[in-house]
Image 1: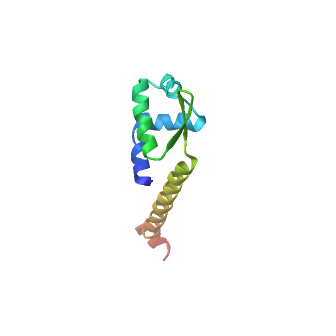
Image 2: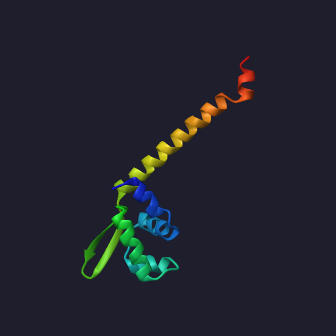
Image 3: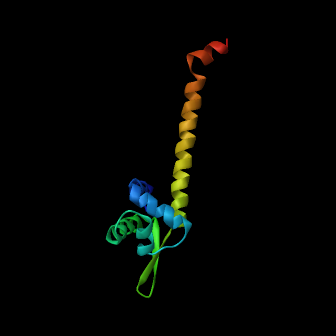
Length: 107
């Protein structure tokens, strides 16, 4: 699954809150809806999108579905963020090393 799709899925505050709840433990749609100011149908819609993005999975037990995060998907997102910060810090160091005040202090 594309990490860009995963990033886009988490851009919505409700979906981000759902993932944060699922990081704590597996939950049903009803349990998630009790924690958020949205309806069960809205939670279900968001869960379908998160599932299609590969961020969550579910298992059925009777008539209930239990949702949980996919740890490998979160690990991939974390790796993306780590790479982004490493590039940003490297660019910052390059700019800082080439700043006028830094060049003067080398003389």
